[in-house]
Image 1: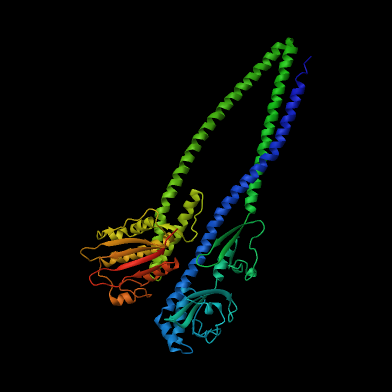
Image 2 (image 1 turned 180 degrees about the vertical axis):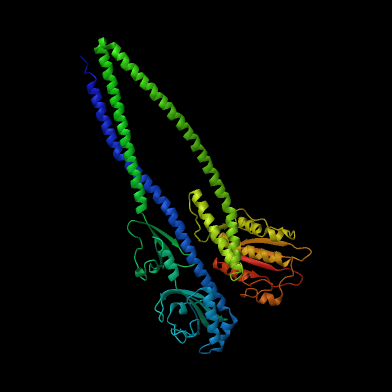
Length: 552
């Protein structure tokens, strides 16, 4: 008779296996769910940060353009003459504002006298014209020193918008205030095409720009249930851009992964049960062989069949091993290709950034030039390539637009690289100073490079026909300021050019627009510094001084 001594151990082993399978069925799917969910949320956060940065940059670009409009109008000779004349209305000034409004894509441009009464407006010939209206009660009028901004409902149009103002002074005397109103309907409509709810709030928490118009001018938390919140500051304002990304897709992905893990655990449990039963059958066959020696031939035949089956299983196992080895070789190839692709994507970024910077500089220096459309397309294509390479490297860009510490030496080297073709055409030497390794300024690298590229380009162009051209850079750090001097051996600045050097559209170049130095000085002042030119000296070239705050 067969022995039953092994039954209790086998029963206990089956019980432990059942408990282990049950524990794995619960723990493994749970661990997979939370792990996949965390990874999906990280990916969602990276994508959302890239989208939020893009929207913040778009909004900052609109604000920068409109700030430049009122700054240029504040120095406009016709506008100043209109204010000095003190006439009730000026059709010529209004017509000019109307043309400029269409070119700058603003909503309304208008001019107020020192009392706050509107004397010229871009909507001068429309039923809802601002002419004659008194806006002295508005914050953007009372606080314009030199600039101010206010987001509010229009008293005439009843439409919400941002008011950017700039005072116009004759010495200390206030001549008037020029204002541009900007509405963000198109921007909000573009944002609303995506499922990510987006809000822009003021420092006090009031919502001013939103994809949900019903929440405009309300306060309170903008976060939504079952969403991932991302917040970014808007440069040059006290605003915050908030974006809510739905998380249901991340949860759904995690649930699918957990379900797959549960199926895998069930499959492993079934295989373990099958193995246990196989061992049990082998034990019973051994007991039967010992108990029924008379059936030895039959047992030997059965064993032979078992051996044959094992051989077939071994052959199948060898085939599976060969397949696994081939798969492993292919996986190694793919891993190598992934490393090569990441390296290529990394190397592409540097020339791509240069292409985009050159295109943006071209747009900034010639916003109305014949190549502006092509430059815009270059910028968009560069952004697209950047997005593709960022995806290949597994993370989004971090172009936050925030002011921070910028090492001075790499900025100068990059600017010289961007202007190398102009310099090499005449084999012009450039004398560089000894810059301390840790010397850094407060700013944004791209914007500081834009200033230096403009100054270096002007210096190179001024010496194209000179017999002994050279450019000398000098750096002086005093206290919390750093002054970078760019001097050349050109013909220098005439008194007439020196007086209008930073006036918009005033240029001595046949093909120039007269905006490069204006934009460069505005950038320097926006970063807390300044851009000046030394007084002309006979027989000496031009000298420009860029002063910026020193990083701690």
